Length: 112
Length: 113
Image (cartoon, rainbow over all chains, first blue to last red; front, side, top):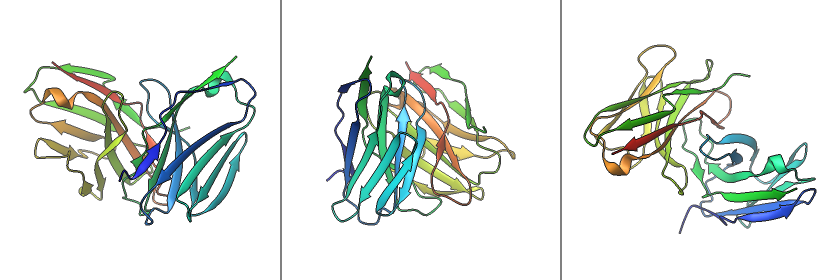
């Protein structure tokens, strides 16, 4: 069983729409849940992270974690063409020297 | 805003040659990492480094790989004898003492011919 599973897409939505991106994970030991954005041939850029279950909002972005179902979500409101990128969900156990386990990423296209 | 930097941006080498990839982590960060991403695949952990020693390494990080922090600012990844399958983007990352989230550099694209 893969540790972090993510639908690779691509996902195409019209500008202004609400985008929903999702992941599942398998290891109950994971405590931190991150979303990274990656543009083509660039490094992953940390968007936001949450600790344990719950919601976190940052501007147009909302991250949700449901540890009971091992489900991670990212919502993007009022989507913009500049949001077009690959979104990587990621987890770690939370110790500072811990590796991050990434999903494969979902390619998102926002159509003007 | 401080950022992780990496050099070179693109390295082309012949199979069997040694390469050194360089990174300058964010200055107050204490934990350093290397990851790689083969084209079309997920980002994979290679090694973590803290207090001048390796904390954890993956199965990928075999005897051909080594890491070093030669001074107070640089963090390097050496591949002693490159193979075709080492072709990938290599990302350096770092984190400070207060959070496990990691900040990534722009990557070095390694092409082994």
